[in-house]
Length: 148
Image (tube, rainbow, N blue to C red; front, side, top):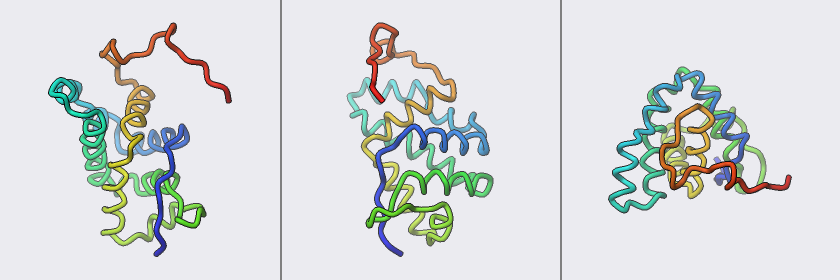
């Protein structure tokens, strides 16, 4: 099977991930965002990328445990996060054909993505977890308009 690469994560990926959460049960995934644990990691000086990796690995563990419930949604999510090295689209059916070891490696590699922490923070906001850290929470006067 050809090699793939991960694309930058987009809002479409967030919506795909929310579909996965709906099938698995959003409460389980929200539980991975243990605010006290995250705060302890931040206060200990742990790099935010490492914090993101911890959260991503927890979420990936939940996904793996519940893979049979959300098989189609999970495959669609990962397929939409990557492309083949030649630039062509990876389909959910392609992901379903991965050998188990290749799938596990893909999940682990995904957990190491640089933009993963920002992605999961955005998903957390979409599913309603609250942001208690006023130092990193955006307020109306801090919003930066973006051109589309």
